[in-house]
Image 1 (tube, rainbow, N blue to C red):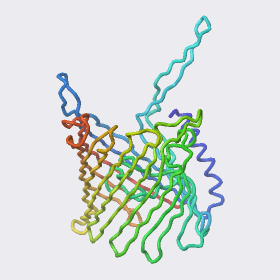
Image 2: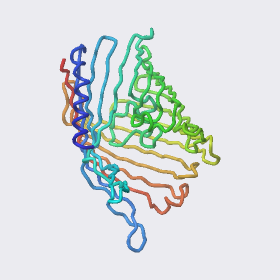
Image 3: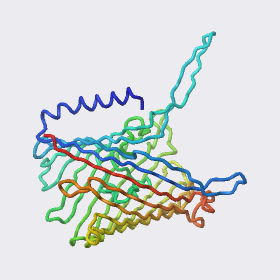
Image 4: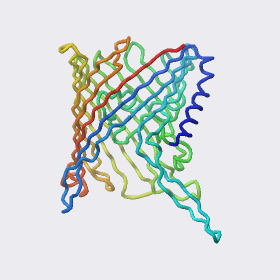
Length: 397
């Protein structure tokens, strides 16, 4: 992104925010920065054609930089706006048109840098309470969370993403309308919504002829203190069944049925999460491409604060992602992560304001269940990540 575009974005956000200061009852500015070191080892061929381990990544970065504005207009109306700043190695094509002496023109595409940084909209929604005569129900409209599985309240106790995000099952945010709220007496929470269906990065023409919405339902219950059970269902599609121009059938069109089940047990210093995901993909316009993929995730968290006097957590996670029915990309992936968190600064509410995280992750493909491209550990990898995460939040009105 060029400097001019950055300045334009900042000025536009400032101009939009100024009226808010006059009408809002309360305004809170918050931020969260993730400075990260990543070191990854993967397989590459040497001069003889044999696969050997090599350092494939070794760099520092700002993986996430969230800046948010939360406004309260009344007791029943509030809004949230968040942008995501991040380091980026992405580039884009720039076309240069040249005219020869004989009058002919030539278009040349060159790769141009975006100055090592990127910016995305993450959230931009309004919450309306009391529109529906149901206690603790809120209607949310705009760019908001996708209430599917663990993705909507994933707090990055480990550096890695939630399974539904990691394996491209659902997006963490999307444009839509939802009703969500809490079941009275602390029995749980629920959500139902309509979304674009292809995530917060896609709107308009980038949806590629997709004029169908995604439909979602989510329910979590807490039958006993410390025990949570939940499930999510999402009916989604990718691209359009027919091309808008020409009305031809689209071979890339997908219909997806997504299901998720979670269980959580929190007792004393131990907090254990388990999640099961099913992704059923149908290609109505193509034969032989339908498949079902599934995932199992188990993540135990142990707090050592009671024993060592410091706010330290030990974290583990095991994933298995199985898409062996996908003839186009058949594999069975096992991922193991071990990590430690040290929350060494806290805010006035005793919430972590600065956190140091260290994770080690190994990814291995089962060659008996995967395509030939994954045999002999060709795509296996290991990764070390260290991250300093810091947060701030201030009410300015």
